[in-house]
Length: 302
Length: 302
Image (tube, each protein chain N blue to C red):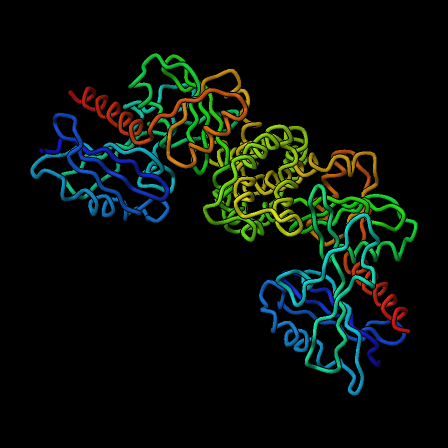
């Protein structure tokens, strides 16, 4: 299969690429751990070529459409944010880094910012573009779980408001670096404990800092198991986030971008608090968004 | 000056010791970084002797009265908790580890636990005993800032209730390990930003996870300075803790154990929300508590 163009999802920790053939199928697929955070500015092109160099046809330029933190200030080239309300992943706001390899024509999609309250995203706008490509009349709320989970309101083809929560990062630090690392761990899980902690986080979000320490105290003096501690830490962090994002999920169907385990936790928590959810496979919406952006670049240049 | 007994404050990260002479004065003082977390069980006695071995009179046993995490499960010997309500640092609940050096008679003070909500302290009970030694009729609330800040209600010479908040540890992880490390740092400070963030944390504690990310977004798109980011992260974490501990400080004078910078931040925050505070120098109350415990041990054995 001949390669027509290349889709790239380039985040903080990982780099993923798909070679798309003329008929729209996936000719090749590859990934590496060369995330943005590990690369100096002059290491982006070599990292990309290491992954996709073998896919590039000789004698012509190939469009490489990339989204994610590759366009951040510490990335390959800083791509200025679009300002919400705006359509996600517009072609005219993309930027191209200079490349040495003449076979490359790289376009990096712009992230989206919101002035007040101040907020930013890079990468999620492409997944939202993918959802809109599949459902052009979508009107509602999207939750994109991650290190910094995003809650996004989309109306009339535009991102109109969004809110990021550091829940994923806070959970990871607490579970692996804080005193709670002595209480949590392993694969154990307790669904009842999770449901109770989600409700506690939602109903008493102000108790977050003390409820956390209570996990440690309960494992010391009340025999709290590791499985229950895992569930309680997850439930408290996500439940507290649900208190912060109530206007996003209350009386809405929430479309959750399904990145696996974390999305399942959000779906479970939203079910516990009585909200309706729908899951969208993450790779599907990422690729659909990159395809939509690619179509715009082709339209623009012809 | 001849050494009568030795007072020891042995926490997670540090070991501090004072040699007390017959007249009650401090004959020697020393500290090391041999905190509980760095020591295996058989390394406690050598670590102690490395610091105080030279102070011990020959030919007799010297009482060494210690408080803190040295009595934890991972410490020198596990000292079972007293259960609140209880007087702090009672003599009969202390435990003695076995020692090889016949000059040592070590007594480790018991921490205090609370069943519901589950909570524990080790070390702070001795500071509270010190406050009670200085003010036997004390009736009120004590705030002990630290990695895990404690809020303690004391009545009739007893600890009747307490609440621990992981604020100090959460702040440290966020400032040094999370994405916020790109926004905060240095010695800069913005008092107005601090006051606003304390109020925001207190009034909208449910927004904690999203307000954190907003610090990063504001430094990216709204020119938030490092000084303002420092103050905002501090203010949000302490303000949110004030929401969790409102019943402890509202309409009370809060006695804060003064450990320096962190205590000043708590005092500032409490002033901002209209509470009255009094500062108690940390070393004074620690030593007074160890002296009170020592007096009990001497009374018990004579």
